[in-house]
Image 1 (cartoon, rainbow, N blue to C red):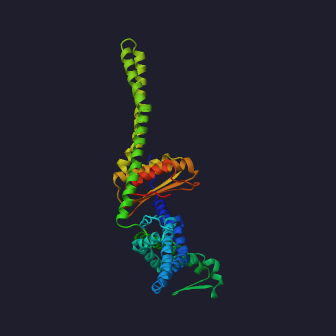
Image 2 (spheres, rainbow, N blue to C red; image 1 turned 180 degrees about the horizontal axis):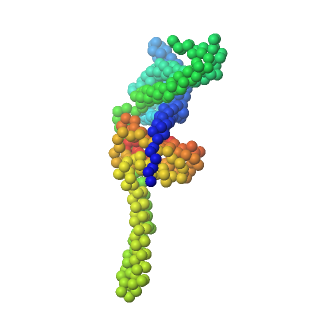
Image 3 (tube, rainbow, N blue to C red; image 1 turned 135 degrees about the vertical axis):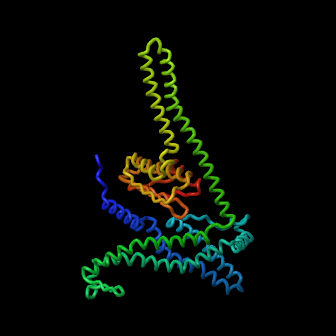
Length: 423
């Protein structure tokens, strides 16, 4: 029997649908809209906090001859600057998933409420480089926020206005849109405008992502820890992650030991007993010996199946032989929830990263099947520079968090290779 040849048109349609999906997925991405919201939320906040922080500092300079007045104004500026920096880090964390630790030095010891204690704190705040970096961040944020708001407004308004052209083109004089040398009128002009909008729409998430990248870099440079503080933070994170990974490895070892004892080991014991009884009956009762050998053969096959399943749980052979794509396709085929797997990798990652990515997907899909109530799920694996980016989505009820051991264990696995896991 000869199978019919695959249609090239079907393949072309599938490729086109995949291309359109990848182009327009960022348009509806939560990350895109959170970053967009931050741009417009920042406009009033940055300008208001800039007035609150910078005006007292500016006024304090010419009033230096009135020492108490200058001290009071500069204190207001310093306190407002510290609170503003904290609020800026909070917005970076909430809107851009970019948490930063406070870079300010701890306050000097002693009683802060005494005049001497207040003076020590005041001087320490002036000498703290994080104070001036936070003020610098606020100053730089004023033009950056204005430019970002302008770019974001144009990025969304132009394509969305063009797409909505059929609803408003009739309100224009002569029912015509003039775009430079183009003069689009009537139904033809409305259709052309919609097409132009659809082409421009995927550009908006790219511009929003660029704005978010600039804000993350500014935040890291001016609001986050630097030098020894960064190394200390990194060492603490590695030590904490290593301790959790060691604990998880011990739990996994005990599970494997229990599975071997309760499963394959018991079957091998039964196999040895059957072979021993068959040997004893071989000369006196060949029929019974043959039955015992049949049982032993079946027991050996069941033990092999259990050992194979256990080995697959440790590191599946298909992952070693063929890579993430085929291995995850096999996982998706066994899932009770329909899963679409998309792997776009020019080359295979290293074995450690590949293994961690595989088990993250397995655990995530298991959670989807058990807890989400989803009707479908998807797995996307791509590269971003030297990073492997793995995204698991579903249309379930949501509400997952790191309080349970499952997702916390996945986060520890990922952090062990200098990665991060976001929900």
